[in-house]
Length: 194
Image (tube, rainbow, N blue to C red):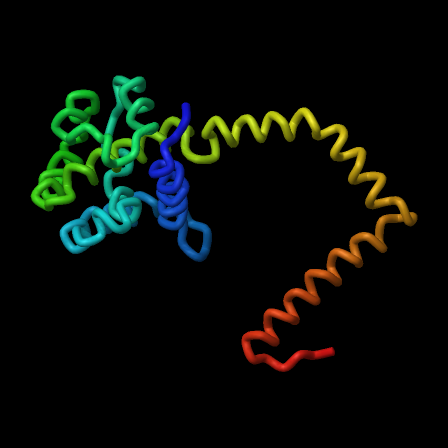
């Protein structure tokens, strides 16, 4: 399945937004609690429907089912100017009762229809695992990397160990990173420590 540029960009942002909500600073899984809070904030987030849909769309996480995956895969390849209306797409998805109520709030907004179409597709991509990381171009690159893995590892082995234990190569790499970091800090106005 090939993702449109629109969904390729938004799918990873949606996944990241969900990941940010997933746990607190102590690593406890609090996704459900944060999603409940986000759902209550939807009326306040309406100005973001067009500019940052992924930040509002997470409120619908877990509230949409997809009996017809072919419709959703076709949608994922489209840019917004080619989207069906929400009314058309709604015939191919099932909303939980709470998501139906939330959608009514969103659909009162002029950007609501496009937002709901976007949300449904982002949720489908997330649930099916077909987000940006699994788009065909990335899968092909991944397969090519797997095929070349033996050669690449062999090359790295020779490169890393050409001067003995490999310590010299690692020191070169670390030195380059330290130098780049020192240059960046100097550009930001910090004193260089040499």
